[in-house]
Image (cartoon, rainbow, N blue to C red):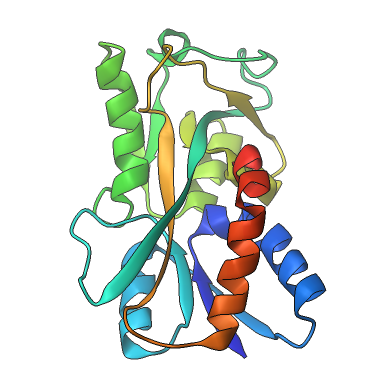
Amino acid sequence: RFRIGAIDSAAAGLLPPLLRDVRAAHPDVAVQLLEEKTIRLLPKLLSGALDLAFVRPPERPDRRIEFVSLLQETAVVALSHKHALARRKQIVLPDIADQPLIVPERRSRPHSHDLTTKLFDEAGLTPRIQEIADEKQTIVNMVAARLGVAIVPRWTARMAIPGVRFVPLRLKRGSSAGRLPLAAAWLKGSRDPVRDQVIAVLEARLKSYAREA
């Protein structure tokens, strides 16, 4: 089996259409999927436990790993469906400036943590961080329990958690703060014909996948 690792949003948003397209092109390819954080996926690439991973590019990339930038995920606001802003077609940051925020721990999810702080910094606002949680599922469950709001990747909406609405976040024109990078990663110098097949399908369909991110 070809072993793929992916962060949660990629597992929810990218992998279903990618694996569908891989199966259509290469029906003999069998895949084993592991969903984990970037900091746990990269060591598995180095140990040979994974053949390919979809990760956030680390601040200090390991030179033994090949990283290929794929796309930028779009930030949205997760709110309880009972929240006063839940029926908005879009939200601007001042709308949630006084709201309690739920953010991931920076040590385990630096990109996702910094997404919130950078957005508020760019808007000249101070985030009111109320809760810190490690897992995306936990964060969204806390939103459902009306403990606060969260800024998350749009693919998080694919997790289909009851009681949560995901509203587009409108930013200043030209702002790149509301984007999260996604990269493919594998062991540098390694040869794998199945990986080459998967990457070829990915590259051929990447524009289509990116439109949904």
